[in-house]
Length: 352
Image 1 (cartoon, rainbow, N blue to C red):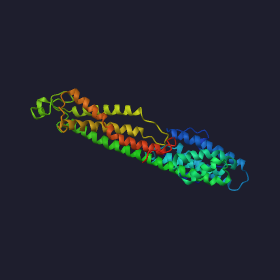
Image 2 (cartoon, one colour; image 1 turned 180 degrees about the vertical axis):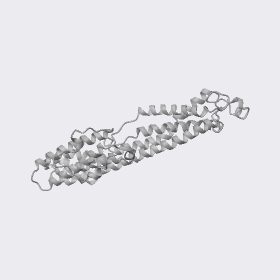
Image 3 (tube, rainbow, N blue to C red; image 1 turned 30 degrees about the vertical axis):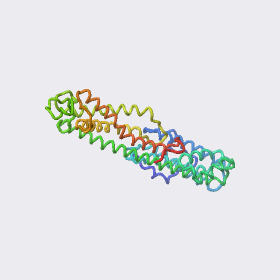
Image 4 (cartoon, one colour; image 1 turned 60 degrees about the horizontal axis):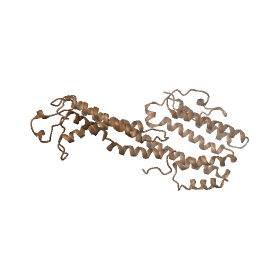
């Protein structure tokens, strides 16, 4: 694996030299975020170079420009390096790249000519409004100054302050989304192992997890030859639980397909859609097995029993679809986090 970009933080490229990723180097590893980092780095690089030339002779600007270059070089290094599972889980590569892009952007506002600050104010306001509370005093002050149209050198620090606060809030919200994604994936692994164990036990010892039903509840106390089983035999077999599990997955897949029509994708650094959909499959297996056990137990008043193989399989699929009742709470939490982390979400996202 390539060396950590942090090692190169102190090695600034010569002034006016673009970061390595900006010199035509192809981004080898997959990830749309790498393209965004490279593109944004190019924009900042061009702006910083132009501003430095337009303010030649002013003290301290070369140091500021060199710091921007270091930020861009580090972001480019993160974008070029292979991410790996550890960096993917911790978000080190993505967060490291964006943190340096954010730092370079904030410093760029210290390099911009004073006559450009007024034109850039709406961009800063949009960032602040996307992540900061509406009553933030910095945001209110900047909005008033922007409305008056007289933003000048005195407001440079205010612009940087709003940007810094907005970017910090964005990073915190993205961290929450990443943590929730990791918890979801952990839940998928644990639940998959549990249902896999149930299916394995049901295959090895069919009597341990009875999936067979009787024509009526009263008949369940009579001779065992009244039984009807998922695999179509007159008694429990090793294929009963796996078949029920398969029907549960089918029901979960139908629920997933139905939810896709109402799901809106938001612009965030991390996606929860894959983890959410993966969770539904083992959840469908669990609800299908537990549902049939409840029906066969006589716990449901007035239920006449499972009278045919078809009815057993249909009920298994229905219970697999019904996992949506449980996983919808996960979906609601995911939707709340994604709204908070997305700059394109409404101003007042769902409360956490």
